[in-house]
Image 1 (cartoon, rainbow, N blue to C red):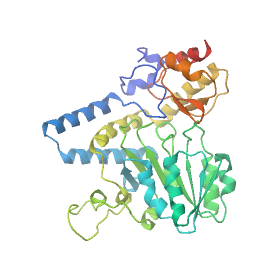
Image 2: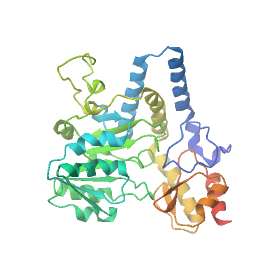
Image 3: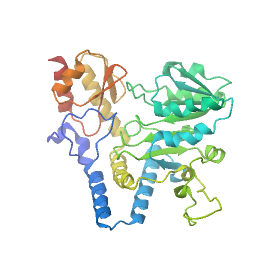
Image 4: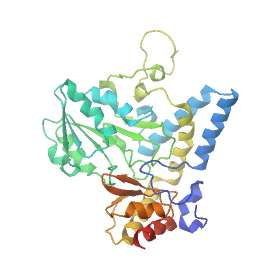
Length: 351
């Protein structure tokens, strides 16, 4: 990428080998070299028959603890799985018959289908615009579920107002942080549940997902996907009864994709080392440079969506990688991106 360190001082904390033009982290992030190398070494050990299961487990626990530090929660409140929908499922199944959950209407389906499928057993699911979430929470509401940052266009939800409204009526707060965690600082202890697919802004391999569970919710929720890896860590996990689940959020773990955890641990540590506040300043700064260059108002998100009829053809011709979502062209700016890449995208759209 750009060889001038002044273009991106954040890159002094880690190295990436990406080709210029990847402005699509909202689809998936790019691994820091240290994560790619760790995963490659683990696969080589597997190929040669030198696999050490304890090392895989240790990598997973490193990742769990680091994720907890990034979101302000102790490791015993962190669960791990492969996808956000798998993490959400037992909590959706735990909604009472006759319960009412409020969800944004243009919500990514991994944080929508787990709730909608519960309608078959009598749970009411109400979908409203993000801007109407607060006023839609009332005494009938059991829970509110929303993405902290909307996938389609990068809109940051008014989470303080949503949380206040939910608490006023005793409703649970379930948050998907997939498009936020890694560039937007969060304190997950404000919520009952917070889940993240880490392969985007946290730059892990796909197949690593983490979540925070409030201890009270942990005790009140049945671990529907109970498995050997969710067992108590001080007992034999392999054979026979009785049921012996971990005491904390780990009871909601699913058996990990080992190589993903090997790559996840160093990737998460890179984010921690740089600092999420520094990443936000860098990412949002690049996003606003892009918007200003197009004559558009600046914003507060690392994700932008533009409505320009020929944008996709122009960006593709210039070698810029992006995504198309909800009828608009979506670009996302992260730690490995430089001002030079932003300027290339601006020129492609304005020349």
